[in-house]
Amino acid sequence: MDELIGLLAAKAGIDRAVAEKTIGIMLNFLRTEGPSQQVRALIDGIPGAEAAIAASRTGGGLSRLMGSGLMAVGSRLMGLGLGITDIQTVARELFRFGRDKIGADQMSAIVAGTPGLSQFA
Image 1 (cartoon, helix red, strand yellow):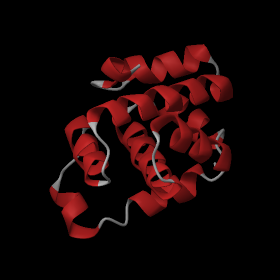
Image 2: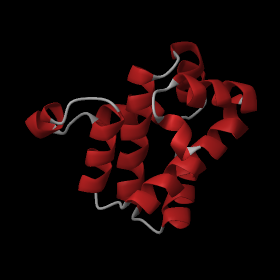
Image 3: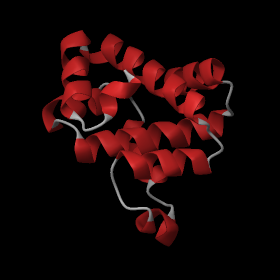
Image 4: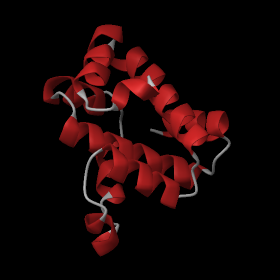
């Protein structure tokens, strides 16, 4: 997880704590909206991913009010101070990292099988 946090922080120019929260939010979104088998492989391939997902769920009532789906994820990420360009950069780097961990075919299946995600790939 430290490798991914450092990569995202450097590429997007964001704080490491924000990068970690961002990873948790994005992986949680993939877990709920993406193809389960491939997403499970991705999460299993990133040590510390489960802890980041759990930490991202501690948003309390406000997080629940935002709902689910890509728009809710965008709202949560913007709430961390990320702009759309930052979100695109983080998503692309996460996908690149994922391809290295689980292979291009499985990562492509995640992108294709998750509503709205192809615009960030």
